Image (cartoon, rainbow, N blue to C red; front, side, top):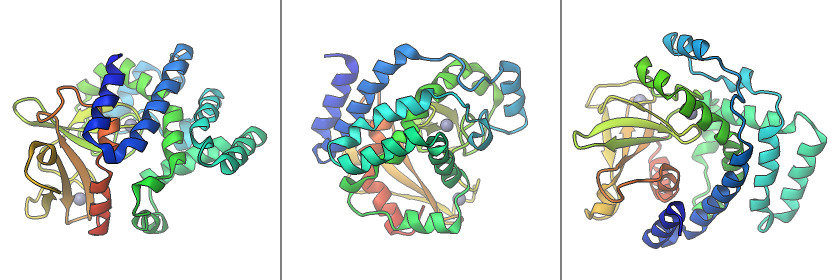
Amino acid sequence: MSDINKTFEHYRTEFPHYCEIIETLQEIHLLREKRSALRQENFFSLKRADAIQKLKNGQPFINLQKDLPHSRESEQYFLTLLSITEKDHPGATAELHKAITIDENAYRDLVTELFRKEINPSQNDKQRILNIDEKADNLDLIPLLLHESLKPFFSQLTENLKDVISNSGWSQGSCPVCARPADLSLIREEEGKRSLFCLQCDCDWPYKRMQCPSCGEEDQQKLSYFTLGDTDDKDTRYRVNICRQCKSYIKNIDTRKGLTEINPEIENMVTLHLDLQAKKEGFQ
Ligand SMILES: [Zn+2]
Ligand SMILES: [Zn+2]
C-alpha cells in the first residue's frame, strides 16, 4: 500500500463516522494524481520579482477576481472531478456539466463567486453560512470540487515560491498566495510554534499564538477556545479557537499529538463536528 493510501486507511479506522467523506477525498486524490502528469508550470504567469514585490506591499500573489487565467486547464479538471458527484446526483451533475460546456463563462463565474464569498462575504453570505445543514452527510461537494480544480496550480505556485513566502515575514491571517482566510491553525514542533494553513494552496505561514487571524485581536480576554469530548489525546489534539471581538473561529490542530505526519485536508474533514458546534454557538 502506498503511503497516502495508508494515511487514508488510518483515518478511516480512527474516524469511522467520517468514512464517506474520507472516501470522497480519496477519489479526489486519485484524480489529482492522474492529472499531475499534465502539470503546467506557470498557470498564473506570475513573475518571481512581482511575487516578491506583492508580498512586500502586503498583497497576496493572486487576486482571483482579476488574475484567473483564461486557460481551460482548471475547467477541464473540474469536469473530470464532477464524476465524483455523478453516482449520487446524476441529474444535477449532467446539468452542471452541460452548462459549463455550453457557456464559456460558467466555470469562471462559479470560481470567482466562490472566492468573493470567502474573501469578502456580504451579510447575506454570512447568514447563509450560519444556516448550514446540520448533517455533514449533506455536505455540498461543488465548492470542494471547485477549490480542487485550482489546487494543483495554487499548490505548484506555493512550492515554487516557498522561499519568497518564508522570507517575506507575512503576518496576516489570510493566505499570502490566494488571499482566502486561513483554513486551519496548526501547532508544530516541540516549542509549540503556531502556523496558519491554507487548504487551497497547501501553504502555511507563522502566526502569533495569541492573535485572532480574522481581526488581529490580541487581547487575551477576548480570545478563548473550546474542545469537545473527553480528555484523551484524540480530543485534546483538536481545539476551536474563538474570538469574541469579531465572532470568528478557527480550528486548531496540535500536530505534536497523534500522527507524526498529518494530512490537513483529511483533518479538516474529520473535524466537521467542531465547525457545526462553533456555528451553533454563533461563530463563523
Ligand atoms: Zn491560499
Ligand atoms: Zn477576531
